[in-house]
Image 1 (cartoon, rainbow, N blue to C red):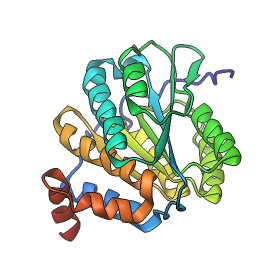
Image 2 (image 1 turned 120 degrees about the vertical axis):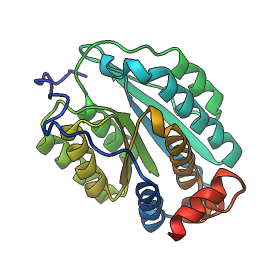
Image 3 (image 1 turned 180 degrees about the vertical axis):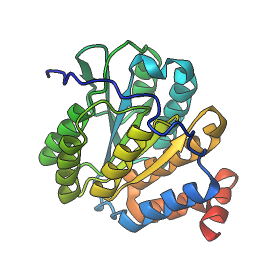
Amino acid sequence: MAADRKTPAPASETGVPAERSSRSDVADFIEKMKAVAPSAPDGDRGRLLFAMDATMSRQPTWDMALKLQAEMFLEVKAIGGLEVQLIYFRSYDECRVSAWVREPETLARLMTGIRCLGGFTQIRKVLLHARRETEKRKINALVYVGDCMEEDIDHLAALAGELGILGVPAFLFQEGDDAKAEAAFREIARLTKGAYCRFDAGSAQQLRELLRAVAAYAAGGRKALEDFSRTGGRGRLLLEQLKR
């Protein structure tokens, strides 16, 4: 797959740092997932496509993000009934895709071996791949974790609209506060009927819970997500947030 060469976006177009994800952000994210979550057919495994930006700008908090993302895959095993595929991009035109796997430890090990390399974003490739895969067999959710966007937003929006028509919601997690990335991620989430949320080193707990919730959603639809929200400990905390 050929890379799109784009001019990097500035760290912030407004100069004003965006606010950290609040409890209301988390509640809104989960509520949107509930609104669009389909019920998985009996005997059919859910499918989750997990996409990562592995370019150099993510290096400062890469290890933290990897740990949380690996924990999501372990949650997949606890939930059961889910196949996961990993896609990540880095460097000039490197974009790699794993096989679909049922044992999340496989992807967790693969992720820990990935290192960031300099390059521009390749979100277009992620959306194209998601479209191709769901045309072969239904994808229940696309998760994307990244910090910037250096591509033509209109091209990305067109592809996101196609995913929306195909019924593939995208859940986008933004690391940091790049204004251009936020606008693009929110638009992709809107067009796919998914959701958007920001995280940073200070909101690792929120990201952990949201990733686990997405895994529950992809595996069993609305019922699994509601059951997850009613579990003890952190799951109970999410349920309290939804009531506020």
